[in-house]
Amino acid sequence: MPAVIDASKCNGCELCDLYCPLDVIHMENDVAVVRYPEECWHCGACRQECARGAVSFRFPWAMLAA
Amino acid sequence: MDVHRTHDLDTDVAVIGGGTAGLNSAMAAAQAGCRVLVVDKANIVHSGAIAGGIDHFFAYLETGEPWDTREAYLGWAGQVARGAVDLEVQEAVYCDELKAALERVERIGVSLRQPDGKIFRTAALGQPGPYAINFDGKKLKPKMAIEVRRRKCKVLNRVQVTNLYLHGGEFAGFTGFNIRNGDFYRIRARAIVIATGNTNRMFNAQVGNPFNLWYCPANTGDLHRAAFDAGVALANMEYVRMTIVPKGFSAPGFNAFFGMGAQLVNSLGEPFLKNYHEMGNRAPRNFVVWGALQELKAGRGPIYMDCRHLKAKELEHLFFTLGIDKDTLPEFFRARGYAKDGAMIEMTVSEPMQARPSELCGSGIRIDRNCASNVPGIFAAGDASDQMGCLHMATAGGFAAGKSAAAYAKTRRQLLPLEPKAMHEEEHRVFRPLGRKAGISYREFETIVRAICTDHFGPLKTEISLKAALDKLGRLDAARDELRADNMHELMRTHESMNIHAVSKISATAALERRESRFPPYHYRADYPETDDENYCGLMVIQKQPDGGIATRLDKLRYAA
Image (cartoon, rainbow over all chains, first blue to last red; front, side, top):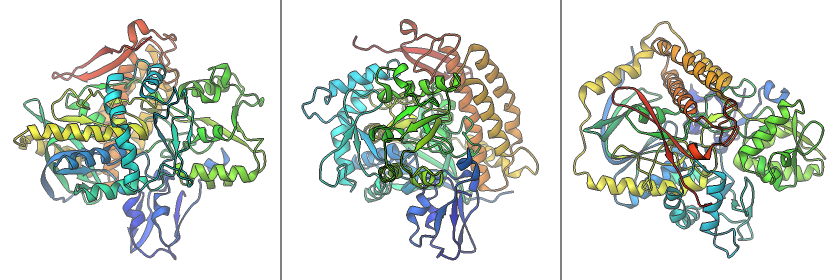
């Protein structure tokens, strides 16, 4: 998983969904969900816009191990 | 079946692609008094190459130093981008616009200065002096978006443009769809600026993560393909661009290491770039990549960024700087365990992409001094044009394109019609993959296209490999009619994958015609390994003919000795 959203911190503001340049994040039941994790560019736009600090990044194992 | 609404819109100047170039085009056209509509596949606040930030801007500043002049800059361009840069266009779209571009960046609220108020520049990539202004451009993209709104431009976010239409040989309008709700758009405009970047998802990514690319993976040649189909001539399409990236994470920024005194070494611990170019670490980018590839080929890999002279604290500072350009890179380095005294950071050669062979030109729509293509009403800017690349030219040249498009729009009294039959057919074509119950997914299709490109025309190509690639890519044509999408996101990706496929054929066709090597490994023909200035110093122009055939020609370029 690249961008990871902590649902307990998400206030449903939709900014990460709105600004993800790859259409990776979608709202589901008022919570942001990383629906296409394999299409993440790791640009960090979602994290920059999140006022609640709900977004973090977890690098796929292969990126760290290669 | 899908149910979607259809919208008909009119504007004076349409800008496709709301990245740096597109937003600067929009600002210029609005300033000229035109109605402007910006259309972006994502959201202009964070879209395009600098969606997450940027940290440098190339500029000469006329400080009195011999290298710091317009003439010296153009001399450098003619030297390191020989055969790809048209210096007359460069003067018009960059030099004439530079001063205003720098002022504009600062006026919209992004300082190009250090905290002490001074401009700090570094040299790299073959520059005769330090042209790269180092600055904190983390907020540059959002601030440009605010400026475009302030200038009353209309913005259509999340709309993927699908085709361009002409009437009587002139630009008339275009179609597109909303990637979330499927709304279909038929838009007429007096002029259009295409600023959609290059085709970045054309080759395999380094660790199997298909979207972890050096450049923005949303750039999939959508408008290269559409413009080509509309008869627009493209140039510099044969080049594939690579750089040096951290192993595991394709992200830009290797120059920042050099600024801290690090150097690229092979697995013997030996610096090697001087063996390939006298400027070593500061050589033009293609030489750095070429050198790295040769070391890997000779069995002296992996390669490393040798930071043995740096303490953990200094590396942390460096990682912070790199994070301005690539937000998540600092934590990647920490996760790899590099935040320690004397780290050796493993690097590798990035995936190739269809893009410019130098920072001083572009790869795409052939433009003249007015940023105009061969089709009246169609203009291009930024990476999507054959003569602009990088932040400095996207900012300066984007504005130039907007001015030219506005001037043209004012000469057109009427909007030209979009033929109803063509609109109906396009609407049907665009949404057809949604109606298929079975078929091929975009993932399968894109994977095959990228595998063929990777196997046949990455850093090495020959007549045989290129012809084999074209044969294999041609055999995929039938599969395009079997592509299936289950939702709007997949429909966008499906069209992207078809555009990547189409551009890969254009790129291979142009590469076949350039029977020499230039900017190796960006165009390295193993069957013609030498540079042949007598026959190939110029732009390979590729254009679809009215009968559907493809023609190429070489537009020769001349440079001072």
